[in-house]
Amino acid sequence: MIKGRALHHVFKIGNRLATMEFYRKILGMKVLRHEEFTETCEAKCNGPYDNRWSKTMVGYGYEDTHFVLELTYNYGVKEYKLGNEFGGVTIKSSEVFERVKSGNFPYETLSDGKILIHAPDGYKFFIINEKPAADENPILNIIYNVSNLEETIKYWSGILNMSVIKKEEKSAFLSYDGGKFGIQFTEINEPIDRAHAYGRIAFGVPYEIQPSIDELIKKNNQTILTPLVELDTPGKATVRVIILADPSGHEICFVGDEAFTELSQFDPNSEKDLDKFIKKDPFQN
Image 1 (cartoon, helix red, strand yellow):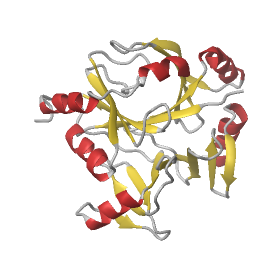
Image 2 (image 1 turned 90 degrees about the horizontal axis):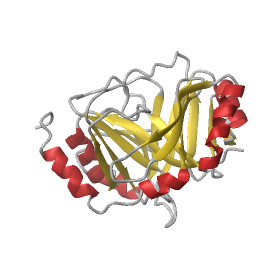
Image 3 (image 1 turned 90 degrees about the vertical axis):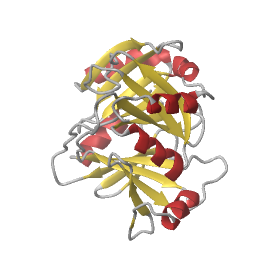
Image 4 (image 1 turned 135 degrees about the horizontal axis):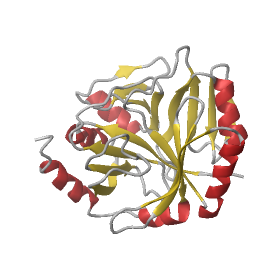
C-alpha cells in the first residue's frame, strides 16, 4: 500500500532574479537548498532541455517536515508558455495577505475573501487571511485541473492509495496525511493543455516499495514516464525515482525517501550561492 510523504511541486522559471524576489520578499519563503547542474536530468527534472540548469528549494520550513516548492531554471530559457493544467497554490498567511494588500504588488480580491496573486512566470497563488498554527505549514494545497474527475479519483485513490478527504460535483481534495496537505482536483470543461510550463509533484516513499509501484502501474495499464532510475547530485546523496503520469498528464515522482532525506538537508550557504549565480548569469544581466 502506497503511503507517500508530500515533498514538493516543481515550477519552471524564466526570470530567476524576479522570481526569487517574489518568493522571498512577497511570499516570505526561505531558500532551503540550491544546486547547479551542467548536464540535463535523466528524469527530465528540468523538462525536455539539454543544457545547464539549476534547482532552488524554497518554503516555510525544512524539507523533512514541510511541503516546499522547487524552482527549476534552464539557462537561456527566458519564459515558458502556460497551459491550463495547473490551478494554483493555496497559502494560509495573514502576514503575506497584509504584505500584498499594503504594498504595490498587483492582486485580485476573490468572492471568498482570498486574494489572488501571480508569480513572475504566471503561476497563481491564493492567499487566505489567516494565521497558521505554530506547527502548520502555510502551504495548504496545490490545485490541478483535470478533464475527468471520476477517472482522476479512480487513479489517485484507487491505484495510488491517496485518501479522498472531500468531494463535490466538480472538485475533490485528496491527501496522504489526513488533509494537512493535499491536492485539490478541479474538473474543467476543456481539454487539458500542459503547454511548456508544466510541472511535477514529488512524494517520498520507502526505497523498498518503489519496484512495487512500478508493478502496480504496469498492472493497471497506466503511464510510466521514467522507469526506476538513480539520479546523482554532485557532492550529495544519490536518489532513486520513478516518474508517472495520471490520466490528465500530471506528472508524479515517487522518490526513495531514505536517500532523499539525506539529500534534502538544509544548506545555510544556499541563499548566498543562489545570489552569486544570479549575479553572474549572462542570460539575465
